[in-house]
Length: 378
Image 1 (tube, helix red, strand yellow):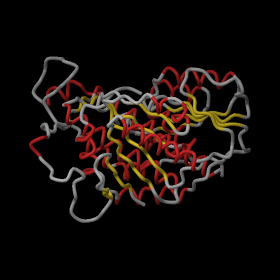
Image 2: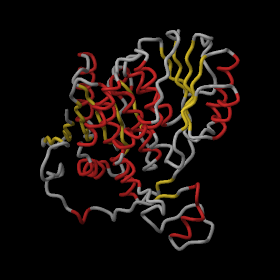
Image 3: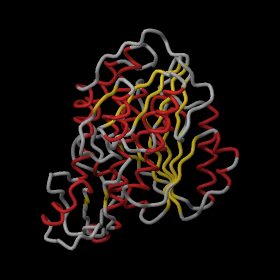
Image 4: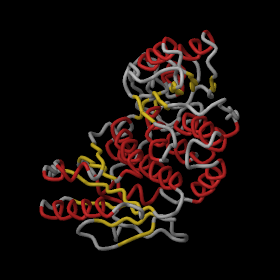
């Protein structure tokens, strides 16, 4: 499986996972065109420690003097360790067996916690599934419904509210959190919970947020993914070479607005990459899904943008037609397109690979703009 990057108005095609020396997508790579690369992180859980470590004791909320957290939480190293994070998360997953198949499944989460629901939605759950990114549950939720309450910090108010609604309707619930109000709520109401390691970046805790849900659904034959698929994904990601290609794409994007588009199979990756641009690079970005794009948005593409097109070899003919029309529209407006073609038979591999690559791109965009990467609650 590989990703090919095809740049509009640049014919060169390059496999981002090729072995051996890196061949830049940019041709002759002019290092002098790059701004100095800086990686700055603020850990809000130990602000004073960080300030002292970088020689600042002013009490300011934003620190701009170091590229490394005193705990060693360098963000590039953090996201590069995604395969190991998935392996670690797998170890804490308990084998929860459901007494009966749920009438419906609701996955409640905001931000990266919500991405978990988006990924599960892409993996063809055999039970009716809803991804809930609001502060209330759908009217159909009852005692036959399985509700996942996901919040890394445990203090996301929308998720606490959903938990209260789940209890009132006697739904079966599972909590996934590192602590906070959600863990206390789960303990108070005897809700099974997965307690995650604390102190991580909430945005990039997707491995620990995803694996408990994935494991429960896989072990109860509710999803078209197995525990073996998880192991294969970890092995695949550990061999992926993405840094150079991601930096090259960040260079091409520059200050333009990224538009991330995909078919249904990769919609979760598109939404997460969009969020990464927003949260990590502090860069406006938008995402949408084919074939819906073909009915309106495709005719209103902003000129100062860069399209990232996530393609799957299993995209339907209707989606393929829409993507081809998009390329024609972009060519007419002289808008650059980067196409990421994901191949392989395992949907989970392709989703996680696209997310892994996209996180690196947003990181390098943050570096180019000198944006401070902050650890914010979620």
